[in-house]
Image 1 (cartoon, rainbow, N blue to C red):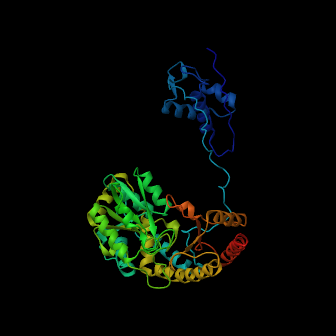
Image 2: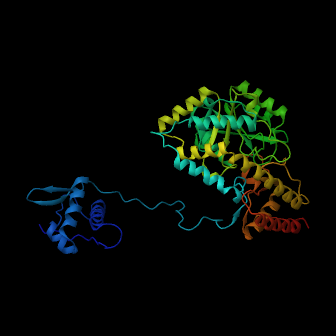
Image 3: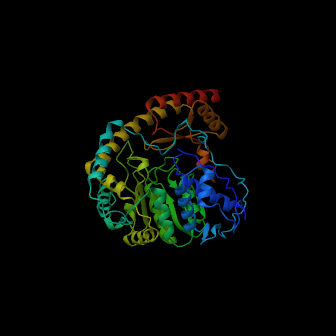
Length: 460
């Protein structure tokens, strides 16, 4: 039988060894049908001569392919293609292709609700925390799926001091953020729907839906989530997701009476209340309001995050709930090896102990307070600004066509401003959600100029 000439090209200096290139070429020929089962390959001497390489290169490639099962060596007879089958020919996907170029809107300044202000004056505290990580003794094995005992104890003290939430380390679970904590909780709850504020946090809705649960939209009024509307629903609700300190995205604070009503309704249903306390530390007219969880430690599961106070890239947060619930979630995480990373935990522990987090919050609170006043001053002549003085965004209710026209002007001028309509599923509310946390002062000034010009033109 005539030995085939292998159509394999080798490139010197490519960064991949010649033996690896030859092996890849043979695998491709076999899997595509270019080489068929029982085909005999050239001898080591002949192929080395054809390719202009040392015999050791071909010998190394053949040995590797024989070990992997692509080839078989027959003593005294040569090297042959093994019976491995052929890959099916699959058509190219017809959906949206992967983009090699930047996504639409890249390069524009995002005025979203979640990007915090980064104060360069506090970078030294960040560096100190990571130096502490670098000299700390590395723990053995995987981290505790509930989080390190030291961080859980520190978080318990921090939440008691800042949110009036008295809890023990056994009631604290370290997460990768609020939506991760929500997903972990849903994973251990009995089947049933989740009631969510409408308009509300889009990532929470996505988390519920991806958990295979139905979403019950519940309207929001001036006192917060409409408990009467929830009560009238026949849906089997296992959890009610709310943002009581600063409703996302309307900025409303849930009233005391509505909080009591919500807890009563959750108790009647045997459901949990999930409190997303994403930015309550940034209240700049009075002290931060006590957490809803402080009213009922058995009924409310509290979710918090370092994304707004420290940095979103840290990807660390916390879930506070009854110890038995925390233990059940930790056990499920352990089964999946979903362990919170030790370096991030150690860094946050250092930041809390050293007072870095407190300094960041105080500094950002002053900045957000001033920026909020600038936004209200510039835009209140055109519409009533909703929400209390808190957080890093303000909501501007506008008719749908006006909101979209202003957004289009902002887009053309390099600003990406979220639409209130994109947060609304059943409510139909329209307007703009103006985030001012991640901008510089100069960028915010330019953005407000674009908005006021557009609103003046449209109202005139």
